[in-house]
Image 1 (cartoon, helix red, strand yellow):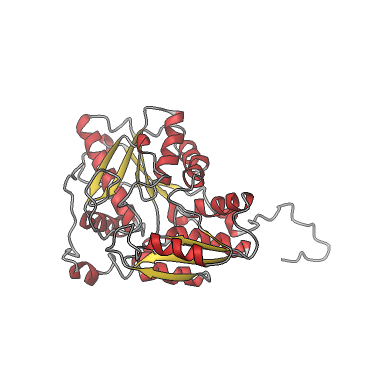
Image 2: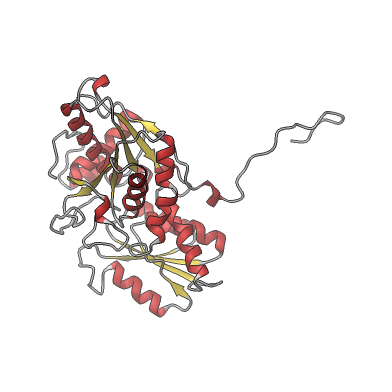
Amino acid sequence: MTATAGAAASPRAMRYADSVLDLVGHTPLVRLSRVTRGLGAADAQPVLLAKLEMLNPGGSVKDRIGLPMIEAAERAGLLRPGGVIVEPTSGNTGHGLAIAAALRGYRCIFVVADKQSEEKRSLLRAYGAEVVVCPTGVPPESPDSYYSVARRLVEQTPGAFSPGQYWNRENPAAHERSTGPEIWEQTAGRITHLVASAGTGGTISGTGRYLKDRNPAIEVVGADPEGSVLSGDAARSYLTEGVGEDFLPGTFDPAVVDRWVRVPDSVAFHTARRMAREEGILAGGSSGTAVAAARLVVQELVERGGGPESVVVVVLPDTGRNYLTKFLDDGWLRDRGIPADGVEHARFVE
């Protein structure tokens, strides 16, 4: 706005980011109180706080790792001007990489499983990326798996580089530098429990490691789908996206996790739907997995009488806008034998 002639200039400086990448991180915590109704009197419950990672520019926690992985590759000479980023992804890491690549001038090819939502694929294309879709129901070593297809594309594409989020140490390191310190500062060091779902394991490993370095008494609780090997279950298919694995990634440090809670698809989806309708927070299925596990932690703390002294932080990895045609759609749930109007409060197998 131009000042009127003769008027004194405003002493206030403009505030803005130099690029959208400067807006990654520093996501807020918000208290959850409605999805824990029925778990005991309010004054007997711990403070349950949700870390809203869907407020990152790309809509997920994976924005935190995109730029660090690219910068590390540039420093090592693995990614050069005009290069191509190739990565197998469930969608969110691709979004984070695509945002950073758009500003750095790289082309992107992302390989996704057909289990991933069409919304995620469309978002990748909106950032200018190419998307290759592979079947879900094949083992990782199959030539048709999205891991194998991505490896072939790297070999066949001149100037190609794969960040390798499942093995790249910049993945957990990004959370050790940012997510962990943010939670520690936001809770004034009062956090007693961290609850997070895991896919590559980068979020829970890096965040948990930082918090345990500050206070070894903090309990780190992993939330995992039934059918994921991270919690020791036998590998089998499940519907929840972007969480759990059928192998152990190199970016996952199992020593950081004190205990696991396994959450069925139906419970994850119903919990995420409750979050939208009761807390006004539109979150993805992996967030439903994490909040369902956090509810169990809250219930146990109340039963043991340790609620009022506890602060539980649960990480919500992404937005529900990625799943409008999936578990947020009543017909999609019914087609898979899951009641659309059900709400499950059961204890979960650990």
